[in-house]
Image (tube, rainbow, N blue to C red; front, side, top):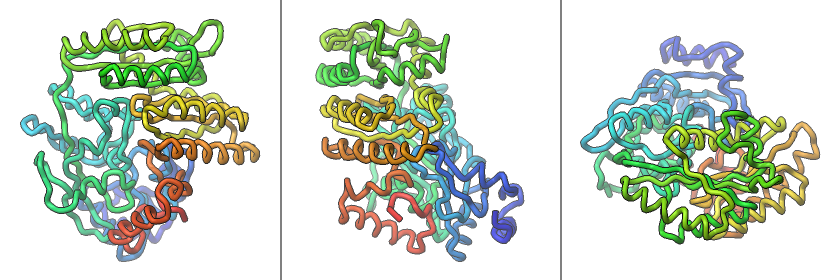
Length: 467
């Protein structure tokens, strides 16, 4: 850690806002990618004013600043790639207001996503964005990455619920992007610009987020298929039937086996997933919601579509507790796969729904070509798949195979009209691939926006752009 920088920050902030000691570099240097950097200092501001002071000082001294939420990201977005100051939002964790007249929640960036779910639902309202890490990720990080999640098919992603953001710019000036009104066309849509900007344009110090009424009822289903291709084909039949599930997830045999082993007696999959002895090659996990009558109607049409698509087994959750077990098991997919081998590389290439079967085949072909174990799961309803490579990157040969495999997975997604990332962001992990999707002109246009707002390049440097 840098003692001079720590000393200066301590003079700007209260002592308890500055983290000292050698362990700080380890605790605040990485994220869920297991990529890490070494910060020169770490601060945990207790107010937006403290963030403003840090930004003002950083601009004056040209010190890099890396915003950090819970460190649950999967692109290296909060890794201090160029050293400098890591600014953690963990102490900015208040739900300031839940306005039940305008259906708006006003929150600080360090609020845990699940905390807003619980607080709003207790009042009969609903904040739909539901990342797989919602139990520990933060709303500020969700906005910075434009997080998606399990309910994206019906309800959209984080940007669809951002109404206003309080921003500290890289030079320390502050302003509010957007407003709490339902209509606002005053100038550029700056709230959308900062949503998904991965902390490279400014620091989010407060957010006003849209809520909706809580659905009256919901029903959950499991559908088993012989192959992943058959399950992905069923996704298209469900959508064509006119149903829009709130959640439509897919899990392949590799993932099912890992989850069943990880959860043991608590797995709702009853040991399914080895691809043999009658066990399915894939599952669809589906939820519909709405009024009581609408859920009954959707459930009937859904079951018909699943039977027509060749599902070998259908099961409806008998109650809310069983539904929650199903979704807890789905959220355990990455953790379960990570137990298989020392290294896990989770991607989120996304394709148009109609191309899901082709993308599934492409992933399988890549796995066979490079002799890699790849578990595939994800948000099939919106085309967002998570091919997850399980390997040991301590072996040099595996590093080369993984790099080549990831490149081919991205190329396959782009050739099918897809994108590099549906929800995890670019960060460090995907910056080398940006021109494959956007071309030189597209990347250049983004750089110009970055340079205009952050001319000194101090705001989360090393992310999104190569080099």
